[in-house]
Image (cartoon, rainbow, N blue to C red; front, top):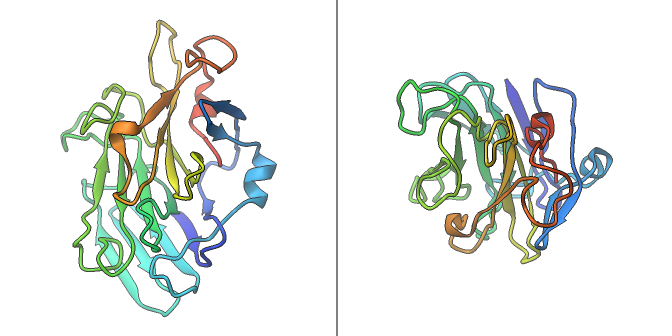
Length: 237
């Protein structure tokens, strides 16, 4: 089970995952901070607030449910949109600038078509606030993110999209952005290149058409197209 403690709007999420080791790469590409060193990530943490009351909230992802416990003591349990959450990671940020933090859950083994073709990878974003699907009436529905769909760049097969997530304002516009790792992405002839996708946040939500895919073939990134999958699997902000 993955647990994220959420609370004060001035701190980033503290995410506990089953894999303890963290590898990160510090690179600035076209004004985007791909990741920072682990020590910086640990000290820069923010603990967001889903309902805007300033109290710490708790999010737990199990095999078939996303459970949210607010600082007020209220609890909400949401069934997974697809069969089961498997090897999931979870992060939170205010991706639509409405003052309420949203929850992103990545499942690298999900099939975006809902079938049995595993290892494609899907990320679900549950909006916070009174209208969001995380704790509200669902007026703002859950967003499903998969490579090659709805304007999101990338391939769709066997890339483990959503193996890791990070949230923070990497574009400098004051709105949280979502960063997604796909450790087995292939963008050249490299056996396993790996990629990081940056999805900018905005007042209208995550701007999928403005998403940027970063590999070691991206101008400004040093080295050749062989990003270590252990690194792209663990982007940190």
